[in-house]
Length: 313
Image (cartoon, rainbow, N blue to C red):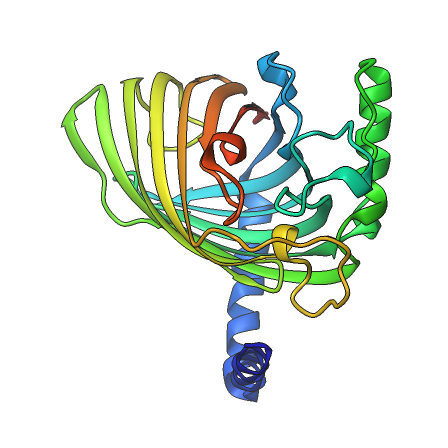
């Protein structure tokens, strides 16, 4: 498996090294980026994912995520082009963080953290369809600072401290390519639409592919910065090729605790989005099915709350 991965990555590097193709691609991308940065409208987004925000004393699996995104968008001829960068941290823990590392069941989620920064481009058309491409580069393991962040956050909130970060997955530098597209948008009513979505990630931290459907009802916007007040439901089925937060880094060895992933994952997200002028807020409850092959579904499924705050001066 690793040999196949090496062959594929080597082929990609060889193709990208063709002088003419590489020079033309980078030159065109650089010119487009400079144009959007110079004349585009800047947005700031801050995302918080956390299971304890549901006030149900749950603290496990995908337990916390923080992201900051800065982007610039230029609308030209009905097509909006966005370039942006983001930084974030994700934390993963077993179902009971109060247990010492030696008492965590072998089938439970390993302790893991992923710290990353990335760059992306999005093209959104006048009909509401879009395509997004990007790359994240970061670090999995102790270098991601998961123990430091969770311990201090729990002390601040007077919550139980995690006891098992000493057995988290090992350090590994990660690169993840990601893409998402919505090729069509159906509008049976001005205040209701349906949009199919397809996405994929490829790298040594996450490799998967998904397909889903987004339904929105209310005052709708075709661009994220447009005025809106609507409810939405997003459902997705994801095929999992590799998940380093469960299996350890693709190239690392002797991880103290790893588990086998389920190959199919279901995700449902229900929320409300509001945007007026320069400000926007989104709140959603996300249900994620069990990710671990040998863990009972009644234990492995989880809910968490996602909050997003945006500012577009």
